[in-house]
Structure formats: C-alpha cells, structure tokens
Amino acid sequence: MREAILLFALAAAVCAQQTRREIVNAAPTPAEDAKPNSDQVPDVYALSGHFERVVILRFKYDVDLLAGIEKMVKQEKIRNAVILSAAGSVRGYQVHQVSNRTFPSKNMFVKDPTAPADLIGMNGYVINGKVHAHITLANPEKAFGGHLEPGTSVFTFAIVTIGVLDDSVDLSKVDDKTYR
Image (cartoon, rainbow, N blue to C red; front, top):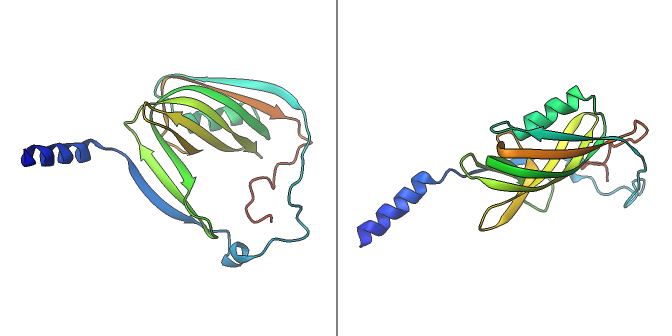
C-alpha cells in the first residue's frame, strides 16, 4: 500500500506542469523605489474621454492570446484603449501576480501550459500602444488570474472587446508605479 501511495505521488509530480518563478520588479533606480509619496501628485485623479470605436477581436484555436492582441493593436493603430471584456477558453496559461507588499515590488510568474481553463474575464488598458491586460480564468476547482503573459494559448475560441479612446486622453501615468 505504501509503495502504491508513493508511486501515485511520484506520477502526480511528473504530470504536474505548473511552474512558478519570482522576479524583482525594481524601478529604474533604487532611489525611485524608496521615494515617499509627493504632495504634488494627487491621491486620485480622473481622466475623461470618449470611445472613438469598439473593436472586437476573435481568436481561433491555438493562438497566443497576448501576441494576438498586440498584433491587432498595431494593425488597428490603437494608441490608447480600455480592454472591456473577454470570453472563451485556453489550453494553457502564463500569468504574473504581485507577490509582496513593499518596494521593490516582486512578481510571481505562474505557468501551466497543459492546464485548460475558461476565460471568464479580461480588463486592462492599451497605453501608448502597449498592452497591459489582466485575465481571470476558471477551472472546476477555482477562479484565478493575473497579468496576461505570453504562453496563454486559445482552446475553443476567445473574444476580446476593446474600447478605443480618442487621442486627447493621456494614459501615460496610469500604470507608472513611480508616479506617487
């Protein structure tokens, strides 16, 4: 019996494909990570704009989700936009999540190229042509998510909806952790 349990545990470990790696996401300099909040930067600020158009992207089987979004952002000449939603499924994924509470920030990259999941949501931004997307995935045990990374491969299909903003909206500071 003991040998059977050990054999089962070994087989489960061999079949498991999930990997994790943590990296430090330091600002350009240690001084920028250590600086206090500035009275010159508001606690919160508002940006207003209008959608010029809404672009719906449809992905087929086995396409890399992030690469496809980046390709279409370039092709559609999208400078600034809001990622509004997504639906579909994936064959495997890679995401990263913040993994600490003090500067410098750290990111935990979680990759499982063999884990199917439903794509139940996506949000984020396109800022000066750069995609900053967050996804929510679900399997029968849990929902989970993080920043979309290369290696998230579409299964049945995926649909991503993007609201393209007019050029008067300046999103350049919204994801800058040093603007504080």
